[in-house]
Amino acid sequence: MRSLKDLGVEYLDLYIIHFPIALKFIPFEKRYPPGWIYDPESLEPRMEEDNVPISETWNALEELVKEGLVKNIGLSNACIQTIRDVLSYAKIKPSVL
Image 1: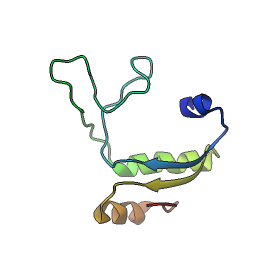
Image 2: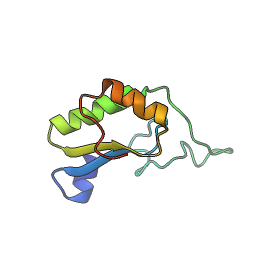
Image 3: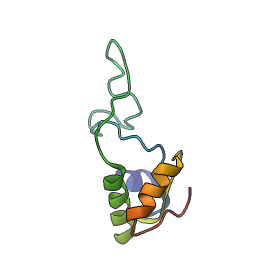
């Protein structure tokens, strides 16, 4: 919803999983946009991964399509194993790879 508001649109034409690695969530109130680094002020700034299956993320994208907030969903930077995995459970197939 924040992206739609910032862009001044009612829906997105395309929403993709840009890179199939789940990063630890950073609340918008803490930093927006969140970026790749979890805590840039730490002594050793780094990405922090989270244990979220890509199936959960894909399911959330499908819900956005069902709600009319997104028209198409897809994958980027995904290897063939990830693509085959998503295709095995996707109710809505990726529009782009």
